Image 1 (cartoon, rainbow, N blue to C red):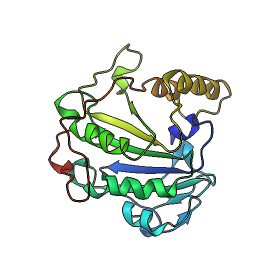
Image 2: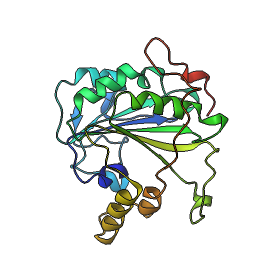
Image 3: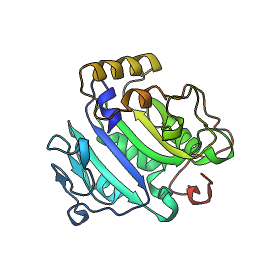
Image 4: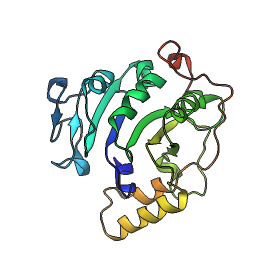
Length: 226
């Protein structure tokens, strides 16, 4: 949700959360709610967050028109915290893109390293997203023990936020940092690590020639080490 605050303006915002845990949101009903108890809580909870709690691709295919606010929060859980393959593919991303307005944002949380042998799942997802979105950005999230240090271990598996931009490619480290600082100054940031997380924007170019383009016919994400 942090990334929503970094975007100066956009039409729709779709978040895909993946990981290990229980998803409890009104019986996993396929509908838009003001808030889904157990799915969003704490500082982000409130009537200003629209949530579609349910099974990711079913929610997406059942939507028909872009929403000017949050399109949904699709929670996907599998053994080992791996992303379900059908939520990583080019076809799925095209479905997402069709729901976003011209300046929309797609965000997915992935457990992966950013560089090295344990980064294949992220790099495959990045490669695939590049074929659908106008720009793709990567924000690795530091561990608490890494806060305040000049560099984080990019070869270490961690939560990584991958963002696809629809109809725009103007997010740079300077613009993201500037917006984050302004929001901190205006006391609109919702987390104490907001600025630090924004400054983690990965400015390298991930290698993609050794990872597959993920499609409905071939998406071996369950065999990728992260």
